[in-house]
Amino acid sequence: MKRCYKCGQRAVVYLRQHRIAFCKEHYIEWYLKRLKETIKEFRMFDKEDKVLVAVSGGKDSLALWDALNRLGYKVDGLYIDLGIGEYSQKSKRVCQDFAKERSLRLNIVDLKREIGDIPTIKEVEKRPACSFCGQLKRYYMNSFAKKESYKAVATGHNLDDESATLLSNVLSWNMGYLSRQFPVLLEGDGFVRKVKPLFKFTEKENALYAFLSGINFVEEECPFAEGASSIEYKKILSSIEEKSPGTKLRFYMDFLRKLHPLLTQEKLQIKPCKLCQEPTTAEICSLCRLRERVRSKTLSSLSNS
Ligand code: AMP
Ligand code: FES
Ligand code: ZN
Ligand code: ZN
Image 1 (spheres, protein in one colour):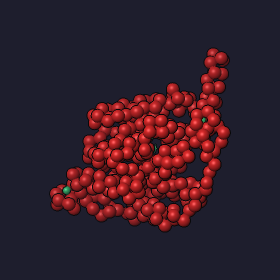
Image 2 (spheres, rainbow, N blue to C red):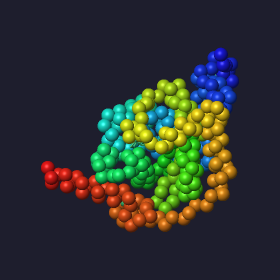
Image 3 (cartoon, rainbow, N blue to C red):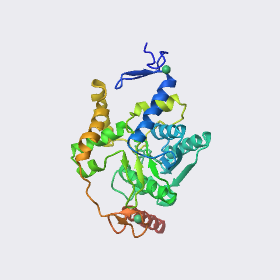
Image 4 (cartoon, rainbow, N blue to C red):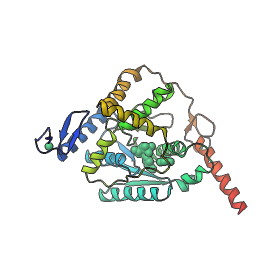
């Protein structure tokens, strides 16, 4: 039986990569302290800043919202309703209940009203749902946060997400993506600040925090996620981690410390979209072009019926 390294009581958690065991109370304390230190170390935001936490209803983003609230940060939530049937309805309900129980403010953007739900857009898009969906989420996180004057948007990306993205960017030596892969992306050129405060925590550590804090979260994956290449990269890294605990954290932290400072960011010609004013490298942003295609498709199917 393992004992809590802080109080000597029976441990409920053992973190192999850190070689420490904790009871429930001291795990939560460790998690909150590590989160607070990460926010400070990377100068993500301060106590007086208004922060928008993008929540999906999953363990990571709800753990983040809960932990930031407990640490005393000013945090509101943003749920983007993607209109993916039962999956989206359930996720929305979970976020609403979470906010209500803690008297927190949850903002909701309904994709169906803005442009069209994911199944509708899927009919006019060749790309896999997850890739255009990611783009849509980033667009609405940015435009909403700007409109409501938030200092930063925080997402629940964890170490598994970030190390899998890093592996994918390294395998293709995508220098542009590598130079933009960082836990803080500063505001400017029409973009709000974007932060990933959970990047040092594994998916499992976030799940443990959520579970031990009594957070109700959605366990189902998005039905369109199946077959995504990121899942393969996560599996590969997890099998290495199994044999050599700490690999994921070392891989990502050493990238930030050793390689990232050597990368130069290509200066993109960003300007406001002529239609929606959101930042883009073209005259009309890709979201406005997509919106037009969805509109034409809807009009043509209406006239055919
Ligand atoms: P994913 O791209 O699904 O791995 O999600 C990464 C992060 O994006 C999550 O941790 C959330 O912070 C945010 N996110 C994902 N889905 C939504 C959503 N429907 N509404 C708001 N934020 C989301
Ligand atoms: Fe967007 Fe899966 S298609 S979450
Ligand atoms: Zn303890
Ligand atoms: Zn636009």
